[in-house]
Length: 366
Image (cartoon, rainbow, N blue to C red; front, side):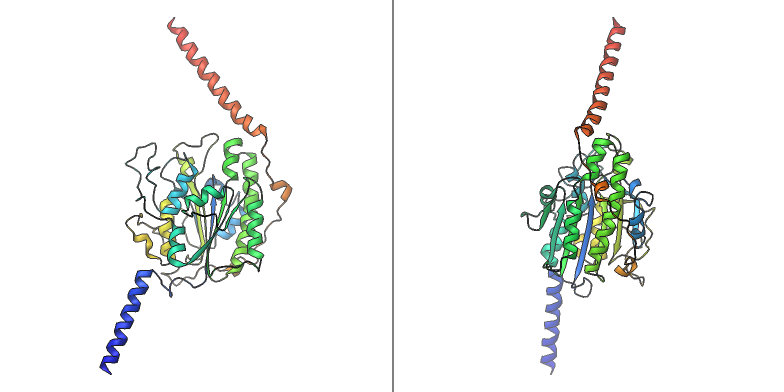
């Protein structure tokens, strides 16, 4: 009897070691889980508030949202900003800002993205719906174009594809899935027409309805265990892309659903985009954020449901949400030469004025 108990105990210890080494946490991470990430290029913090996104504002209330999140370097490259979000640290290549290189946390080149970790260690399957599919896929360290759905910038292809995916019962889905929705249009409109101006604002209003529709459709697929994140890689001002100032580096960040408290308060929480990956892993009880190749700091406010008696929001919380009808013709954005000419005109005026000032200064010395 004693020998039997010893063997049973040793088997139990061996099982625990296997679970620890493989990262499996059956009690913590649901067998069926869905992570949805809305990654939006160029969405300013101001535009993510209720005035411009009234429908999604009601969704955000189910979790937490802040307009205080900051990127740590200028927006010289959209890839640089996504690296900070999905890798939990600055990349080595882009680890400098206008204030110098010593102010920016660095990442070990071997550090993996949160997508790669969840795919390799926790059997997640990823679907990428993007207006820049190839580059986004490479940034996520996904070598093959498997489950990558690319569409033209400012087309409605991403929205339509996601809705088809959500409602098509014939689609074979893994038990654990990551759905990445990457929108480029706002950034392009900001650069061509101006951040916060008419075309930009109109597209935000359309995006508000599209995000709400996608949220309801995707959440319905897994009502009990779906986690949502919305984040932008940078904000912007008129023709100010690439500068390191608060208007450009301020980005909105919202979380709701499984792992996060219902009605969490994050409005005034000072955070950085590099805290997103550790925060997600903490909410899902994944231990990878403790790796030395990552920044270890997660968002410290009480937003997690796993350590609280407060439950996460569920699909039933938004099931009756009324979403204004999407006017397809109104939401379609067609770029014309006019957009480029607006920016070229301002650039030309600035060059001419600079030349005149220099010429005037030279004439004063003669």
